[in-house]
Image (cartoon, rainbow, N blue to C red; front, side):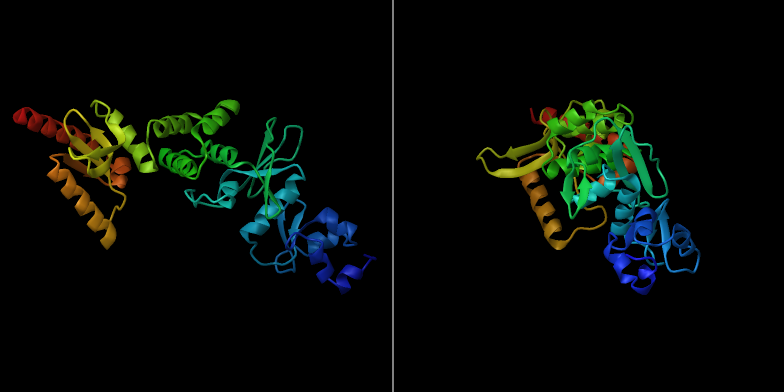
Length: 313
């Protein structure tokens, strides 16, 4: 552009931006004086500053896409998006909703630091990016564990890892990535992965394994398929204590069942009763909010099942 052309045809500036996001350096190349760029970002003016040296060519609230573009422009061409943002872009949903941050990986020698909504992590292990809609993302296994290392909640870590495994990320991949990276923040993810490896299919089952370990009871068979003496299917118990004939079910609906789910649960419990199997049902929320009471109920149910087995013998 010739000097002053941008003012007569501001639409051309937008064409050189990433959805309205552009650097001050690029604007100056297009003929906009840097002082004008910053003046236009003052309160009540036409543009908006998103990050140091990165602007939005309007004064409205930026979208999440624009915040990601701003982060990448700020960090430079080698940056790769990881963590929660990369997990969402690759189809995962079990992520915390408190605030929006863009976690970026950059080469170790880069000097750019975290700012605003951007978390910069320098690494010697910059992954090969998966590019979706023009955005370079860390592979899902790396994105998941980068997020897990920053989560302080066992339940949030368990939920995200369980969803990743259900979506096809393999346990060996997750363990290998955990071992290859920094040991900082890996204790909770490692514990959750071991529980998933032991047979848990969901975050609730991971929590159930944690609660069971507090009970002192023999380990149940996790996700154990039960059939009657004729080979007819009874149920797949979340946990089954074989020696005493006790099934432990972590039912997925904390407050109420839909009609179909309720009917399926009633039918399942009827099959348990017909087969002479005791069943203890626990709501997932109680595993987190009152684990000691759940332990007491589990121990009591196990004793009752054991006593019944003795009487029947």
